[in-house]
Length: 320
Image 1 (cartoon, rainbow, N blue to C red):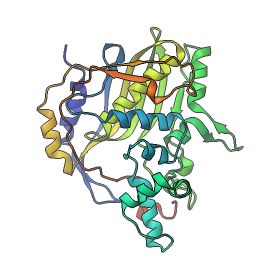
Image 2 (cartoon, rainbow, N blue to C red):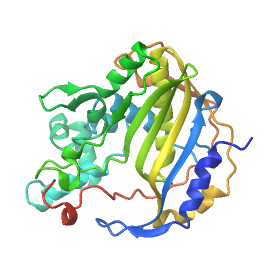
Image 3 (tube, rainbow, N blue to C red):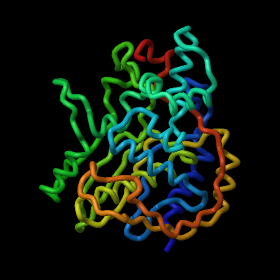
Image 4 (cartoon, rainbow, N blue to C red):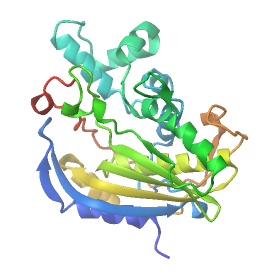
């Protein structure tokens, strides 16, 4: 059988000859394709990609950040996960430019997030981000709707349910659709997922409207496969398939040489994930309950993160 990681590598290779496009907010060039799907049977190996080392500590803590409904980066910073640092720092720099705050480097900013809880509460918040929408979507009457909690409860009561879906795409806060000052400052990329039980196993399908194939997607695959396994554990079932459906999938111009390096590597055997502690709810789950075994990837390949997409003042006016 062909190694399942080749599904990802095939899409990665396709972006090398994708259509040249330019991000309107940053001027960064991408090579883009549209519409694809890959599938991984978690029962046959956990899809933590092996042709470069994936940042597993970041996967665990970011997912827990989402699952616990958090929207402030302090939890991540306290756990030495810095994949979200750029977004609140970008907002802070805008305040500096308006004369509202004192200038500081990103390292100084993140250090203050870690050491000063009051500063973190004010400047570490990313409103309308994934965890907020998953666990505390604010309804028009002020209720906090726990979408993911409802999904789990619904599947407990009705394993044949077809309606168990979680969305992070709230038009009220998106782009020029938002009221002035209320627009989300981060581009919601992996915007919707559906959970389904087939042959007694828990399956999950993600729709990702925009996908950075080199840096982001290996992380997204691991995160949503782990989410599938966590939901299965809570429901007392085995994990089944993780299905990853793409809208726009692309490579950034400055990732080309790294992608070419990755594409000559042969995939290795997928690792396994197990839980060392029993839990029956999202509230009981803790990151330290996860054990990864048998992960022997190729070395990491470094590349620069491009902070692109999302709110663009030229296009979206005063939404944010």
